Length: 360
Ligand code: DAV
Image (cartoon, rainbow, N blue to C red):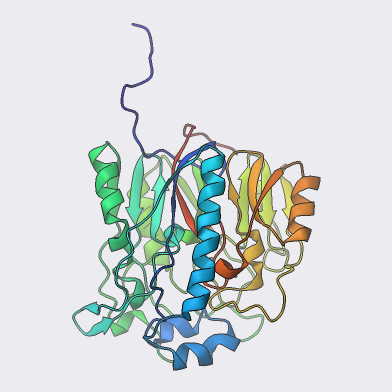
């Protein structure tokens, strides 16, 4: 028998961050709402934003900011399509509609950051059991796509549906002592994780425990994925950890981008890899960042081992990528950045052309 390509290959196939990108979900920022006030937010928001979140709790983000971010998302879509990538979008849902589970209700946030919500490993899409009450129903926006991918052959699963009861949260949370262990706002009451606390590198997947991802959640994923994958949990110098993709970013085989402030020592595993230290962020001091640090400059999207999408005004990052031998493609994204992410957060790769490999 001669080997031939399957007639209907699975529409979902992605093992790492750099195989040639064929299909991707790009988020939508329409209807973005400030979540109701809750302790889980306090542990991750920039301190200069706490007042805004208190005042605006349960209300929309400023419409002019949403409109500006939306335009940049359209620019990203055009750029991806021009590079031959098929782009899919979630369905905007009404984030003002209350939802809940026994003991609590909330309104929503947005569907702008598919990377937080969906973890693609091979031909499987896993819905994250998210720790923020305001994000409990966030996968709804992606359900039409998930059903379509499932019907076309993908595997589809979800972490254990969390209850998000008060026992999950440390209502006395304050920042831990400087130099001491990170104090997390969530407990080990039940497994929770955001997909963005994991970053894929073939058989090896890197993870961090954070204010949304607990050890219980990491263990659930480890057992769910089984012995084909090795999950490595790293601890970084970050007093407010939430999402690994502005801290440790594998760009291509043997090439690692690190946040020089948060990664004082590169894990031994990467011995022999080229380690690139991200330049200091160039985002202006007065630029509003509601939900992220300035290190969002590291949150890039690889289209393959060379092409990388970088923010258009981020000159230090563009210069570094050129020097390191990559091909930066530029897109305006500063207004989108205000909502808490950049190109990696705003996307979830559905299909990259490649197979499961070990890079170590
Ligand atoms: O500064 O590490 C990254 C957020 C990605 N959703 C940071 C925030």
